[in-house]
Amino acid sequence: MVRCHAKLNLFLKILGKRPDGYHDLISIMQSIDLSDIIRLEETQTNAIEITCSNPNVPLDHTNIAWKAAETLTKVTHKPSRGIKISIEKGIPLMGGLAGGSANGAGTLRALQKLWNLPIDEKTLIDLAAQIGSDVPFCLIGGTALVRGKGEIVEPLPTGLADLSVRGGAFLLVIPPVKVNTKEAYDSLDLYRQAENIEPDESIDPLLLMQTWQKAIFEGTIVELLHNDFEPVVLRNYPILSDIHKNLRNTAGHAIISGSGSTIFAWFPTVNDALAAQNAYTPVANEATLISLPVSKGIELD
Image (tube, rainbow, N blue to C red; front, top):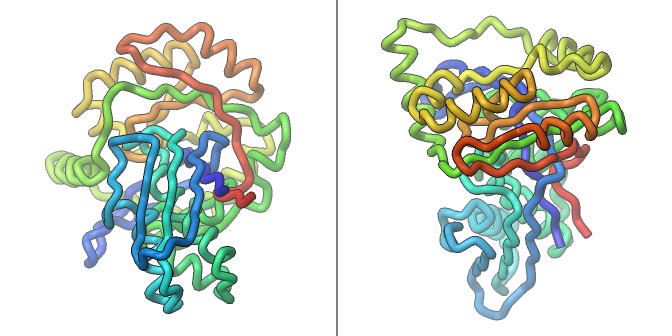
């Protein structure tokens, strides 16, 4: 059994577009205890097979777990037998929580163990980057600075989960709408062109990491929460704008994770998060849940 943890973007800046069509980014990402469970078993079919508890999840080569298995099979020339991947979904789809990427990372870790592959960590991360932008972070997890198109992952010396009770808790609001990541990037590009906004390329990664490390120790990360997607996503999805405002009125702040649609707030204690959850009144039948920071992206049992 493999537990694949969701992620939140605590800080996200989208930089310039790369020649390969991707965007460079700089982000502070955090693993949380919201997770999917995957199970792998070898078969005699010489094929990759996926089953999932959520009927909306693709079961073919477009699934990132499929891509992970296919990539590792080709690179290592293993094995002649097939692989069945069973996914039990706990992470909402298209919510900016990297559920698919977490499954891809979990598949890499599980197959590395199942096949006893002598692959070092750097090689595994390089393979993860080929599969999807969030997969390298999901492979490592914790609290980390992420750069490039997602392939550069630098864990903070002390993450939120390393602080025990002082790591706080997140209140997640899960709206009844989904946001397509590519559409969000396209909308952001058009918005910047229309408003003549240049991406902020001046961010110093080392200074950003130091600033976040200090805020984690001091419990002041709310002051640093940021997401470049918010202006366009909230404009394109009025329902998300209403929910964002509702959470902000309840918690004092709110931020979208990734390209959306999940909106969240951070609290210094679980009790604070629970109080905010109890005070929150849905405006569009959105769900709420409490989630804690964790120090790993993948856990193998």
